Amino acid sequence: MSSLISVKEILDKANVTASAPCRIDAGGTWDIKAMALSFERYRPVTFNVAIDLRTAVTLLPYKTCRVRITSEGFPEGVEYKSKEMDITGTFSIFFAAVNYFGFTGLEVRISSGSPVKSALGGSSTALTALIKALSKLTMLAGVKKGLSKRELLMIGYHLEDGISGGNCGMQDQAAAVYGGVNGWHWNYSNAKSPVVREPLLDSAGMELLSDRIMVAYSGKWHVSLTTNRIWLNNFLNGKTRDGWLDANDVIKGLISAVRSMDWKEAVECIRKEMRIRRRITPDALISETGHLIKEAERFGCGARFTGAGAGGSVWAIGAPDDIANLKKRWEKSLVQIKGACILPCKVDPNGVK
Image (cartoon, rainbow, N blue to C red; front, side, top):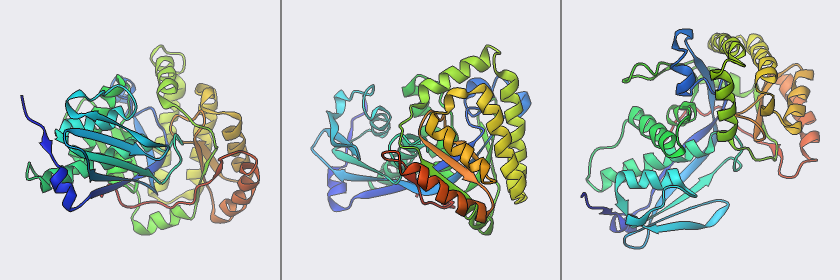
């Protein structure tokens, strides 16, 4: 049996940190293997934008033979003896990551720039940052070289998918690893390259897009796992499949529009996808998020829920003047909801670091 590696003395000398960006997205759920692989002939895609609401992880020294994890909202944290970790409860995927590296004698502190359960990919982003920090620690410990971006993506995805019991997508981890604005082409039949990244904008283009997007938190938590399973079942049994295929074609158009910086067409594509989503995934919208999206459309913008919706956040795209006017309207609507707010952010060109 391989022995655990105590990193307490290493971390006594210097803490280890890493951070990764959250994301906004369109076309989500097509990154789930059960959909994407079964219907790979339709060339499934998703689109996302990394935003500079970053999640940071700090590794600190802790008690010998123990591991502790804390985060905002869970200040008391959870700790276990390293050989008795419960990888089924709170912080399960994070304990799984520490266990994968075989480290002991450390505390993991997670600090998020986005609200808890805001549907911005927060848990996957935190896991990506943690794996990056643990990878840095392997180099300090002299165990092995650090992980490549591809390795970070694959380990994060498979850990989360495995611990959750399957049917996780990969787009959240992909945005966290690479940053920027990307179209993701899903090819799970290719074991060496299950996803192909298509970077869509250079730094100047990202600045232009930053002036054309806005993100708002609805003040309502979301839980994606249950929602995604319902959508997946309805796709697999044929009830909503045609709608999903139509949505996939719309996102291909969105990717093309963003690549060519045809912002009017990008707005129209988001509107088209939302029309389809209202039909095939009506449970993605709650009254608060549905109202925000309707307001965006009245102001000449396109808008959609982030992630699996059912609470969480909404993002809008439009001309800079339309976004400025919409901001005033959204602020009036959000002030009436406890915890709801505009989330000031821009495109983050950087992935995990």
